[in-house]
Length: 81
Image (cartoon, rainbow, N blue to C red; front, top):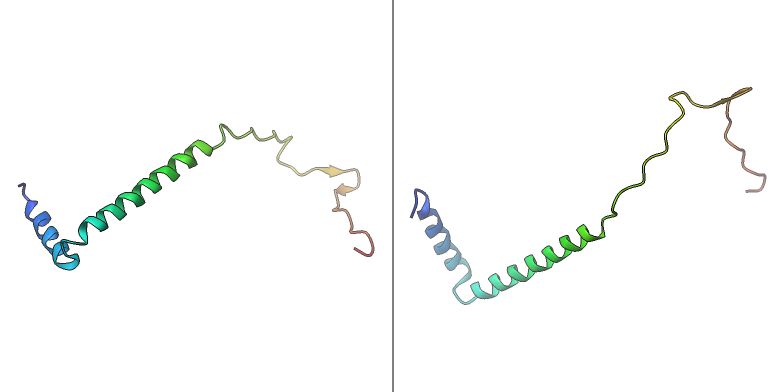
């Protein structure tokens, strides 16, 4: 074992004491199934990504558009709306 190999031994002993030898295979199986589902979902998300986003429309300038009478006003709501 390496310099800190005894940490792994202590960790295994603590896990055995907490969960017992009978539950460890069930816990490992559950973790394995969870990782399998997680990897599948990540793979599906990567396949669903769009190829490329359409380029943004070039702007005519940084100043807002103004009409002959000043800045364009927002349209008013029709009466009764």
